[in-house]
Amino acid sequence: MPQAIKWQRAEAAIIFAAGLLLFWHWNDSLSWWAALLIFFVPDLSFFGYLFGPKAGAVAYNAIHVYAAGAALMALGLCLSVPTLAVIGALWLAHSGFDRMLGYGLKLPDGFSSTHLGRIGKKD
Image 1 (tube, rainbow, N blue to C red):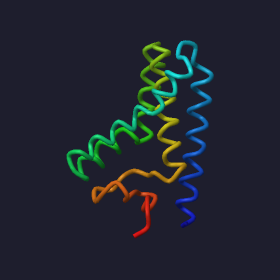
Image 2 (cartoon, one colour):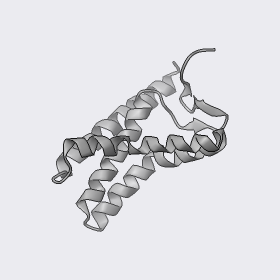
Image 3 (cartoon, rainbow, N blue to C red):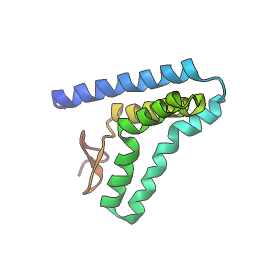
Image 4 (cartoon, rainbow, N blue to C red):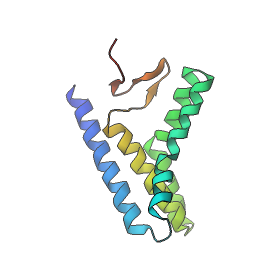
């Protein structure tokens, strides 16, 4: 694995941990099971692949970019909506979790092609 990919995956682990820490710090309303469900909501973007690999990559990347969770978190803080900030922290943690495991942003040629390399079974 190239050194740059190792650094990106390490960075993702830090984003994952930071998102979880922010969630635990701010959360006073979500139960653990609701938090777990919300953590996995970004994976619904997989349905974009029903419309082909390019549409799937756009849908997946739009949801899994770090800025999506950070924007929700910031919006919740700016509007004084703690639940939205907590959801943003979980969203950010999810994106870090995926990248930490090697599931990078998708390339338009198929789900297995990511900016961190190929995932899945080797050809």
